[in-house]
Image (tube, rainbow, N blue to C red; front, top):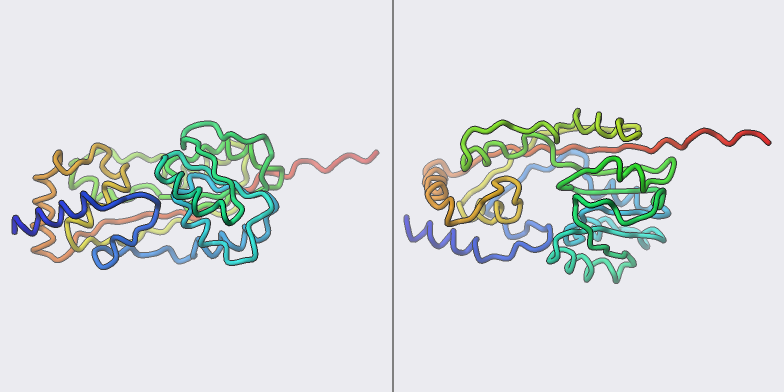
Amino acid sequence: MDRSFDALVDEAGAAPVDGWGFAWLDGRATEQRPSWGYQRLLGERLAAARAALDLQTGGGEVLAGAADFPHFPRTMAATEGWAPNAALATRRLHPMGAVLVSSPADAPLPFADGAFDLVTSRHPAAVDFPEIARVLAPGGTYFAQHVGGRTNVELSAFFLGPFPVPTAREHEVEAERARAAGLEVVRCRNERLRLEFFDVGAVVWFLRKVVWTVPDFSVDRYRERLRALHELIEREGVFVSTMSRTLFEARKPAGPAPSAP
């Protein structure tokens, strides 16, 4: 068992985690998908946009995969703050006509007021509604899939023990924050979904990639908890956690109609 544990952990610890794809987990973990199909809906909105911005685009995988139409909007920009992902996104998106701007998730957006009629994001680490409202043109739309509140509390608690679960990402709270920034909430739909891990290596790789699940994670620091998890999966066949996803759409008011001369 120890050799199997060590091999699984070492393999996952050495595997690359660049970009925002999860193909490495194929056959080792499964995630239930939301019912709405975000990438397809994103493609429909991009097809109708004149100027669009994708926030925290990762390696550009989702944005590129949504482009099942002749081209991006005439103006297409994306932001990413992590240098390895920014390099991947640049290589993937530039040939498609999109400009990648390196910008930290918690920094003001480096764009002019009202620059975009569509702002999008899939799984943003931070959502700055005032900044989103600022760069949206009047009548523009913010369309996103957020990681909802209480995501992966089971996995976090296995390593961290009981902890107060933050409420900032609860969908009702996010809707109120959007309204406070002057946006009209069109849709705020949340689903809770099943995530299954079939070996401890899948958990190691996931925690290296989705770093906010266990913020101080390293194999050395949590080796004994990983060993306990390995034994649990060997005994029960699976470790189950719960994901939360929110389909979020908000609109910037178009403003008053111009007065008659």
